[in-house]
Image (cartoon, rainbow, N blue to C red; front, side, top):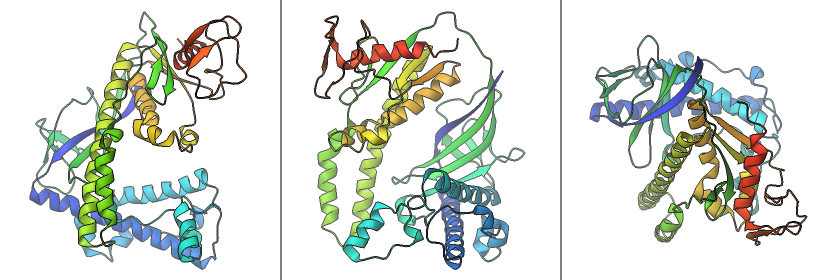
Length: 401
């Protein structure tokens, strides 16, 4: 038996009373996080901190229970939501210490130095925990299941702590059999739609399928990917289709007074368009990953540095539109849930420069050259299809059947 943890997201349909509680919970969670950030800044300021790593053990931060005593309205909210805020704040400091050098300043701060003559402080360091804004749609809180405090009632409602009546939700798929709900994250997007994400724990039997069908995928800027059977994904390019409309709405925003009521209304309108593009992209990626995970026993991709590719001005917009990195994540967990394999081969493997027929490697292969022509064996093949075949061959040696 294999232990699994997986998230399941559902749309909520709260009534007015439940909406009021959710809004209070969002606000109080944000307030608690901002209080922690404020206390961190004050203590770093007292220690004359300039840059570098943050010693979390040296920071004296009170528990949420102590902080709540000064804020009477926080007692209406589930205490586990505040406990998760504390954990999230701790994780934010850990992320700053592990993923950032503690010396580089954010691009926004560096730009303000040039335009406004701002003086840089530790608050401008890249990755350091920052205050959460009410206007940036950062509306969410997480609570844990303790002795059935979170449960699904009659397949139509979900029970959460501090609410007398369960909230109606759209139950579009079933949770795995014998699964246990460990926690739930409630959130609201810019379109005022409420969601709940369950983190569930369950066990599955390790099954060995008799036939092993392997597929190699090569990232393609134009077609999203080309597989080792020569098929192209043909991504719909949702952003490109909506780009002109989005451009006009952003032009309207630029003509309004910053932070005025009309500016805020226009900002929300733009956020709704961007959210729709995001939802369309996610839906397509989920369906494409599901179909591949269902049809193949192992899928092999190249571990390319998408962040580095995004630095190229000619490729960044297309890369941001298609979301190939998110697709890889979806594909990985969907395969592993079925007991199948997801393999990444080394990003330095010369998949594009190597001939899939004879194995010869070209020294130079410009990006504009879309047809691969082998000088040794004379093989002529589509560049991306050739790379997909090489990826499949290289990854097959790494499979553990």
